Every structure is written in structure tokens, then in C-alpha cells.
Image 1: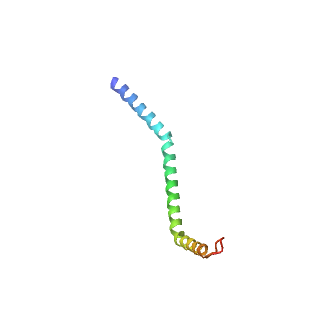
Image 2: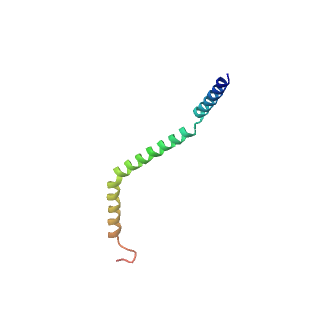
Image 3: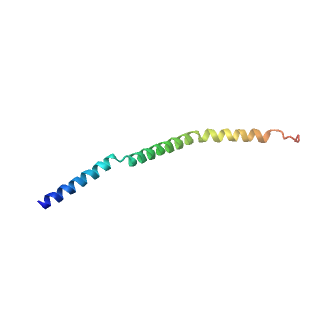
Length: 75
């Protein structure tokens, strides 16, 4: 009889722990934030890679135009 009671108490504790674990949502939220951050990083990398060449051309063009512009001293 005593073994039966101890077993039932252990089972009820285990069931309570399982219920608490299933009710806990903190881990799920952290995983969601990590997935969102990863998605943003991949999208940013892809956009930078796609725009890298055109931005370099644009800034080179601006630099060339500014270097050939007359200065305020007239030279």
C-alpha cells in the first residue's frame, strides 16, 4: 500500500511538472525572436549584396563629379 501511495505522489508531481512545462511560453518567444532576427539578417545581407555594385558605381560617379568641380577659390 505504501509503495502505491509513493508512486501516485510521484506521478502527480510529474504530471504537474509536465503541465507547467507545457504552459511555459518563454522559450517559444525566444525562438521566435531568434528566427525573426535571422530572417532580417539574411534579407539585409541579400539586399546589400544585390545593391553593392550599383552603390559603388554611384559613389564613384559622385566622387568624380566633385573632384572635377571648380573650387571656391576659382582654381
